[in-house]
Length: 444
Image (tube, rainbow, N blue to C red; front, side, top):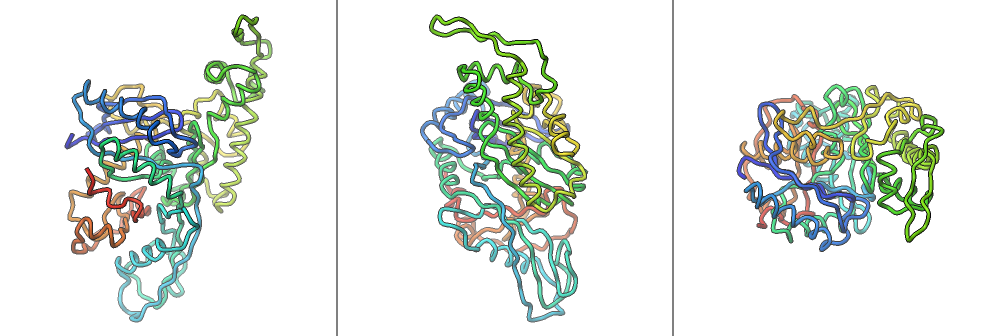
């Protein structure tokens, strides 16, 4: 297990457990299990025992059949209450001629981390956007400059503290060590977006069972995120009610016969719904099914466009929209989104980051989050082989700020100055690890 990385995606519809490793040809998945999810509602763990009942058999099966015992994992966190806020931080400098250091930048991020949020909420991530240094406005990095006043613009990703704690309790009760909690839209983006898309500007939409996640990139920096509190399950429920069928039949209708574009649905085709309890079977027209699906998808798109407009990057998405997740497989979805939004769109899977000897069923959009967790986990593990500074690196050239309790738990080391200013695609994404972990890294 030393060279392997394990990840768990606690989804509303399914729980995915992956074990993989980085190879020259890409990430090779050596073991995976997918089980129906119980105890997760709209991306948040609500019943720890139910989640364990879904998760533990997968862990045991991997141990028994693959001879791999999972001890530590990377876990995604999402949920309908994730929100994104903007904040400006100011710092006056006594010695204007001294070069601005990384330590000053980290101090500003720590101050942002300590910003007041509503009761029951927690700042999960802090992302620098740009800096003003005296008369120099909108610079990417203030390090190495001189000046008397630094102003930093930041994006704060905020989530529910209970959601964080519940996810942590699931992992601990499963006998695992939590390596890192990673925002799920970030993991999905890592798996499916290209560097060109992130530079030009792109909106990634991950349509899951319980939620639809949005992540906006521009100039290789995460600019906005939002979680829409409905996804593929809402479509299934609409079909169940609109066609008076069971959940199982509604899901089958959606996958096999459904389209989100009623204009393209066949006019004269119908689906025969078996009768229950001795009742006669019924027929439902393809156009009726498509109309129901289209109404809900249009609602999701309207919510997405509202968030894109509020982000301030509506006219900066040169690469358009990238769609992933299990819900991206709806027939005619790409065409529908292109017509409704005016942006170019593509359906994305993590296939470009997977090695040739990985099972093809893994290379599907519904596994984007889990694959992204593996990829980010590999970057985190690589960073730990280097000399660990007081700010540990999770993604290329980014800073993870740790609070004083966490520093005491790992033993604070000597600060190491960076030797490069080049930033990777995830370079400007500081993941803030605060008291949400309660020294999880010391737990078995």
